Length: 71
Image (tube, rainbow, N blue to C red; front, side, top):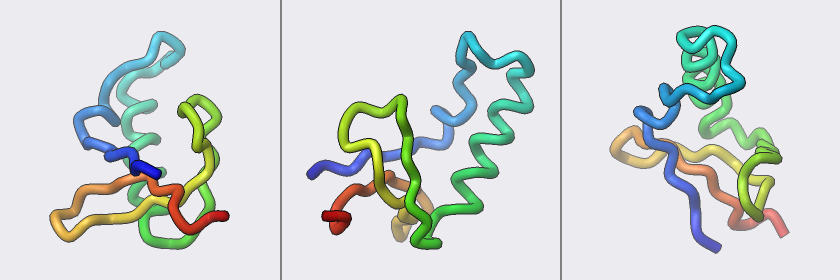
């Protein structure tokens, strides 16, 4: 199953539902930083399947959403 790479610049892209764009971006960045490499199951219901996975940090500091090993 392919992983989804989370690119930092994408965390700053505003959504039409963001009432406070700066706060929404800061919240997304804080979420990724808090849960990367913790083993916490993340369920992103707005993602295409698979919707459940882990946030894993790569050697270059990038973070990816990985669903492998959850079955």
